[in-house]
Image 1 (cartoon, rainbow, N blue to C red):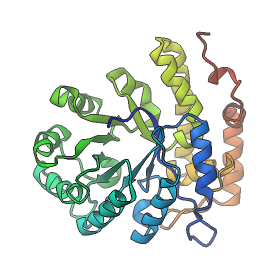
Image 2: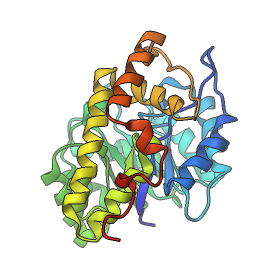
Image 3: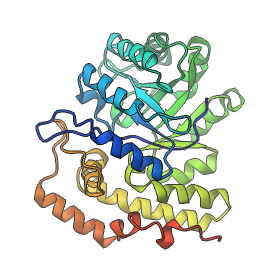
Image 4: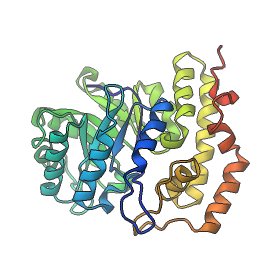
Length: 313
């Protein structure tokens, strides 16, 4: 299996009391499919996976798996600080029929050497030997910044079901080293939405990200324009993506602000789990004004908007 196209990292819908609101997932999945999204990466950073209990993570995954199809894959993030818990989630995901599993490095007692990280991942991957395993490289969140080239050198002979890396880092040279490893046999998936064009230029065929939840058609158009050689049109779309990310950073980042934007866009995802603080009513009002200033809702709600139409036709 190699991934292709856009994979959304969905927010975990919650009720006002902080409990799961799983019925929202049906509408959520339907909208993502309509937007051209090829799958979901469940309970990762965007899904607040580390803030959920193991049982909640299992329930969230099972709900998303109801909508898995051949052209809509469900990938389970199973990473935990304890690999025993990760192993439990890996077994559950495998038995449930997930497309792939993934795990970031543990954020407490962080591995500092490739062999330490490989050992941790191997204990998880072996619990789901028939399921593709992706390492989730996101040093900004996990604090684990082991050389990915060294990781692949060791993991490729230690983890039989190693499929690739979800590469959420801005070191594009290292990303390219990973893409070259083993004559390109592994699947290196781009992880930074705001520089997707850079990943495409290096040869990435798939990307996993949070803004694909509510801007899928724009990014699909970016990929299409790039594929047709319309670089200036692709750059224009990427520049707009950067404008949206600038708004996210103004309002506490991609999870807190992104979850609010998802709700404003018609998929009610509710509050965040502590320690993340949900935006106040005043902040949401200000957020809407900032989004209106860049015509956000006008663009994402209008498939005939010039930004979403192929300019080569």
